[in-house]
Image (cartoon, rainbow, N blue to C red; front, top):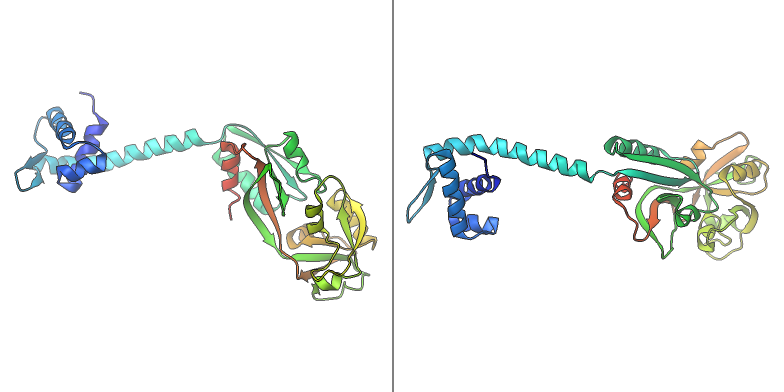
Amino acid sequence: MAVEIRELECFLVLADELHFGRTAERLYLSQSRVSQLLQSLERRIGGPLLERTSRRVALTPLGKEFVTSLRPAYATLERVVENAREYAARAQGTLRIGFQGTASDEILDAVAAFRSRNPNCQLTVCELPLNDPFGALRRGTIDAAVVLLPVAEDDLVIGPTFSRHPQTLAVCKRHPLADRESVDAEELAGETLIAFAGPAPDYWRQAQAPTQTPSGALIHRGPDVNTLQEGISLIAADRGAMLICRPTANLNGRGGIVTVPLTGLPDSALALIWRRGEDTPSVQAFAKHLTP
């Protein structure tokens, strides 16, 4: 005879509670329905599983034997169903991720983990221009982007924030600040900072290359660049300094350039962003791997 899962579930709860009223409450059933399920199961098995009097409910010897064998089998069944649910929830189709600058270890680890967990989804990555963090996302050529904060765009959603690091000041080794152990943001007054050109909003450009110190002193704006490598070349030529987080400085070090720890400014940080209303299962699955 076919096994009814609801009957087995009802019996397991009854074996825990030994009370028809509490069992009915846990299963959101009536007490009469609980009795019907138990009686149906007993008919299938061919013997009584519970004995009840006006004072108590107890398992019969058959019931004790049955519940001992049933619990591990039922737990295995629950795991099978849960595994199937997780597999069905995995991302499918194609996911396109853009990132600014150099792909950090966090990004590469997230890509590897996503591909391992979601073999039915084709993940592609591409580099975004540093001077245009939001353009590809708005044009629909990518599904999500890893960008430098801040992000204050009404049409974009900020997901997990990660890779938070103190800023450093990248200067030519001939620069007066090159020998310093650290530099405070107020000491940037009168210095020249290389900035990003292009369509990025002004608040974002100001965060990457401020034109004032925290107290309001003037910082000169240097040449505009489109890429990090353009900025590195100008630093080496002593055309200006540039704010770079420590991991980026380590990945892009070259002769003739020194990076000095910088205090007095907010840390650099990355975030995964996507278009509002388009947080697909694939995007959400990738975002989980970037959560710190």
